[in-house]
Length: 199
Image (cartoon, rainbow, N blue to C red; front, side, top):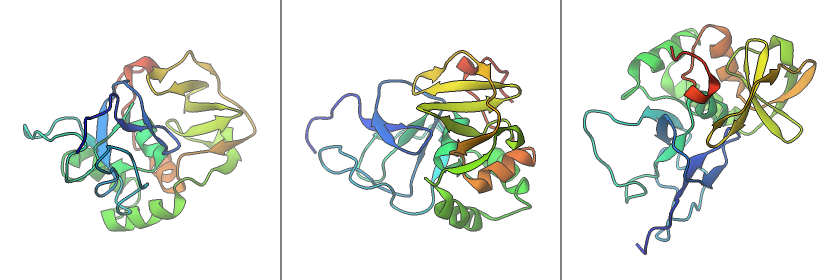
């Protein structure tokens, strides 16, 4: 491989796009394999339908980012990862994965992955008032995470100042399966810039 660019294109936005950005986040993850070429350029969107979000560290494992095996991706927080179509990893985030599964009636990982693979990247119009906390919507050019009566503008580096939750129909980025889990009580990890206490 040639010299590594900096920053690498491994930062995931809430709509699933992968960008080069130096911002740090709370979670890593992958899309089932290697997405980059020898020039560290992202050349495909996914390697499989298994898109997961993982802990930044697990059992002292050390990996070379964008090495030979798979492409490590990074997320501001779990709200962003879920909106992009990822789910909690059953190995390094087992309690979260089990809670996510339980919020979907005990659905197994393969079934969750099948559902999410059909729903990723498809914005649907729904009533903002009916959406759970942790849902991400797009209003105009702004991506907003909903929390209580507020909407938090999203950037790769964190959340902006809260604005009132929109009303009426909005474009929802979060996949329908994930919305179901959020409605049924799954509580995602929020970045500290959201001003919330982590669960």
